[in-house]
Length: 263
Ligand SMILES: Nc1ncnc2c1ncn2[C@@H]1O[C@H](COP(=O)(O)OP(=O)(O)OP(=O)(O)O)[C@@H](O)[C@H]1O
Image 1 (cartoon, rainbow, N blue to C red):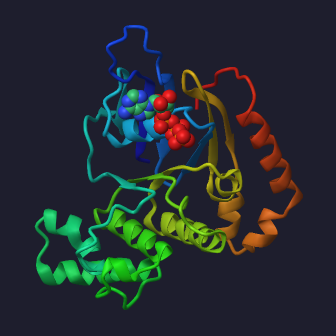
Image 2 (spheres, rainbow, N blue to C red):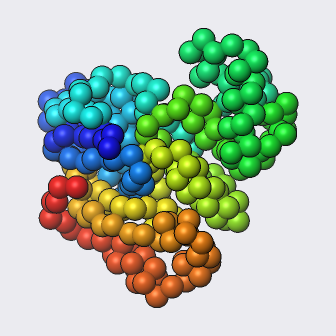
């Protein structure tokens, strides 16, 4: 089983001051294919920094990042990233946005269009390929972003607040879609969110970061998402006593002093 792993990763942003504190300190975290890891933590606890290190956008100051034990440096198609603001090319159609990574890989024009349309259908946008980006709603744009990330056939899907800008109803629908896409694509997912409910619903494992310096304060497994995929209703799961109790415990843990655990 393929694994993306951060080994004792520390990160300090370059600063002229020598006493700049670490943003991440000796943080160890593994994400296997088939796992859905969701990271919670107070603002400034280092969540985005952690994702940027995992994606290869930032090189750790200390420690290392591996995929299947092999050290990785820099971004790669194996670790696809979905951003909060979708980061699409506004002058291209939905299809051409999704096809873009395929174009970089030299896939022929017809094959690109065929695969892009299939990926759009996978995220519920069948027949919408010709639409320009500006004609799509926020939720639809985010779906195009997810389809584009999947186009490179990644092993890992890294998502920084992908649903943060959406209204509550669209966000609920997109959570369900994310679970379906994750399950079908058999990727390892790493998602950052400020929503404890979203974390609980999606995650096979929730990781809470403690701040200053960013480190893992809590790592706990859940199965609400898997139960949803097995046919249970989302609303029923989210109002279950076990879900509500876990939500309250996670909220409390985000605001507490911590001891360190390895994930
Ligand atoms: N490019 C940068 N240069 C210097 N410091 C940075 C940079 N990016 C982030 N930081 C600092 O690193 C710390 C962690 O930031 P990060 O964005 O990773 O936290 P976060 O948990 O994602 O926060 P939020 O929930 O508000 O998005 C913060 O103190 C932030 O000010």
